[in-house]
Image (tube, rainbow, N blue to C red; front, side, top):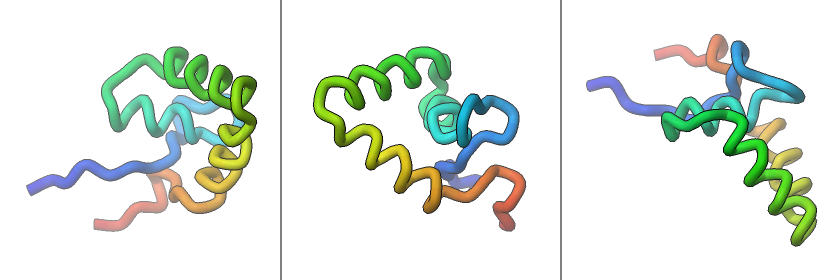
Length: 66
């Protein structure tokens, strides 16, 4: 069985690849995820902290070993 894993995208990134990785995981357009992230960051401010944490914690897709 092939498990679905969350990782930063190395192909679909603007800053760190977090939104691109989430979009690939959810099979969505990365632009939609980036807009949602921007709205959360501007509305509540916690989106910025969450993005920074995820940028440090999530591995890139080429660093994953199975």
